[in-house]
Image 1 (cartoon, one colour):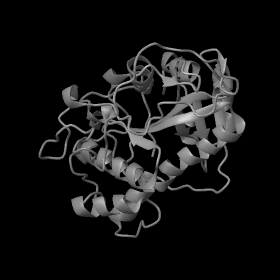
Image 2 (cartoon, one colour):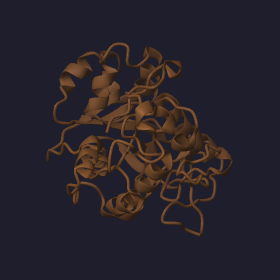
Image 3 (cartoon, helix red, strand yellow):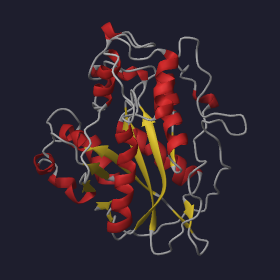
Length: 317
């Protein structure tokens, strides 16, 4: 797998002289702070980035294995709500990277989409960020949630979200330190399900410039999902095939947020399908009881972004 002209299995080190920022906090609150700006009474974040801080409390500052190069995984999506499969995908990709590449994962991020996406069944950004933070903080020791995309008033394309992570990690923090003390930039890569690659191979859904930016500059780790013909999808993405790693699901899991919302609407159990603290949060805030989700007017919901937000970004799950 290659990105930026360098193979993911044979990475080329690079360095930066910029110093790293001091670590910040996330939910559960550490030192009395959170990465999510103050919310409005209706549950929406106010879209003000002035109080935003990039979450780096679990970002490795130093590479452990001198034979490997640093990698950060970023998963963009609705996460309405986040499921165990969303979390499990990170672990599957981590195993693949450990045994099949020369990379060392130094961080993993969930990036919930903005309310401006207006997808049917989309809970407010405030709720989705909170649920993702509960899931990551209470079930993982390396995943983090970045609310930057979610709290913005306008919709942000995936290509620009990946640029944001590249800037925060490599420009602001100067990458990571190698065992010999040298600085090295971190490769940012998209993590997604096979259904996302399916949309990327569909003409007119993604712009060529965004595909080239995402798959050409950063690359992607794709987890196979039931019902998606990954070979057919990849046949339409031959230009970037070397930049796409496909990870098979050895234990099949087709849980989706859509199925979870449907089960909740029918008052059926979703225990062991989504994290326990997320179930508790949903119950406390009365989410997904019907087609009207707090903070989002379902009558105005659209499955795709408005035309002026083109090139399109498709959010799945």
